[in-house]
Image (cartoon, rainbow, N blue to C red; front, top):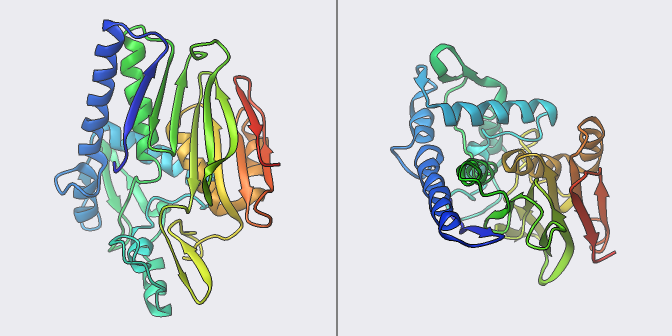
Length: 304
């Protein structure tokens, strides 16, 4: 999944080490199912065949598809796992980013619509348009953390922190000191600077930003996160971190709020108690906002 997975336990012993090994084995197993960069994965098979016929899929992929469809509905289309055609059009797929032509962008947008993913009987998946593709890059790491953590808790481990790169974190228990697991949020434009510190107790956090993949053209910066409704990168937000019940949901919502902006985050957090968004807005690099509240999560903004 193009990142490092880590497991930190509150107290290390033989049982915890064995459980951590099983957790990481589960991550590897899920990558073999969900990665579009593995030609024999379920995701790759669906992308090749689902536009022409229904394709049977395993329970993990179906579960994740159903979550993604729900977040797509609840985010007013801001989160969409079928943006592969747009990513390719902008050149981010092959790490050669460029401004697309109007015709290319128009053609790509016709192949983007989570609403045209159909899950039929016997968990068979089909696409409603030729050229559609799914990509779990915005949610797969969080889902892997959720499933890996289940392996840990099955062994009786009730105090651990799981992370995937800098974007996905899942905490079980209250941390080694009993005050929550402390996680720093780095500033998207200054890596030696923290934007905030968050203490997590039995919840997850996902972060979405444009700091890794972007390019400039005509003095304007374009990032790799694309609005499926317009085809263009959103500009309102620099970074979003979302605290939620599961890592998969937190990851999906972080992308949704990055695309949909502060207004969407405020609507969603009002309607879904316990969801928290920490947003660094583009209008003023030092302006951070915290939306929502949750028992078991404390946010300490460090840059005003």
